[in-house]
Length: 165
Image 1 (cartoon, rainbow, N blue to C red):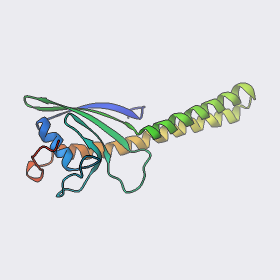
Image 2: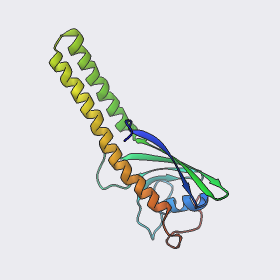
Image 3: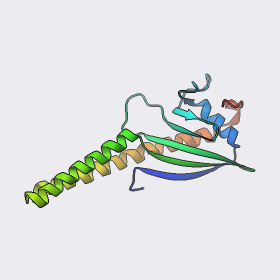
Image 4: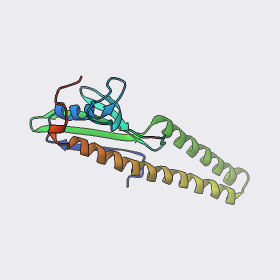
């Protein structure tokens, strides 16, 4: 497991750039499109001519849902997908905010008041919070990457072939 709530990955597909983006467009609900009427939306976001910004469709709010940002480049034998994933900006803000607050409290307890037990509790809470975010983020990321790979490898007869850009 990666010790950061973000990462990068490169995927290679035998599909052309246009086919790959068409498949993603068909299952993405977003501001520019409503997706395909035949297929249920699997992702929210935006699919553009060279890439996409998507997240999985969910029923209720989830602070640990990853944002998948991809750039697709065509090759003579298919395409290469450069994938970045990270927490949404509000979730990142709260992670770093509470990390800073707990670290400040720990330093205050250790250095100013000499209350080492309370400082230790703050450091424990800081570590627990960070590990909890990592575990939940990577669990959600695994589901999203599996869903993305299923869409990319979906049988061609079930997908629309016309470009929607």
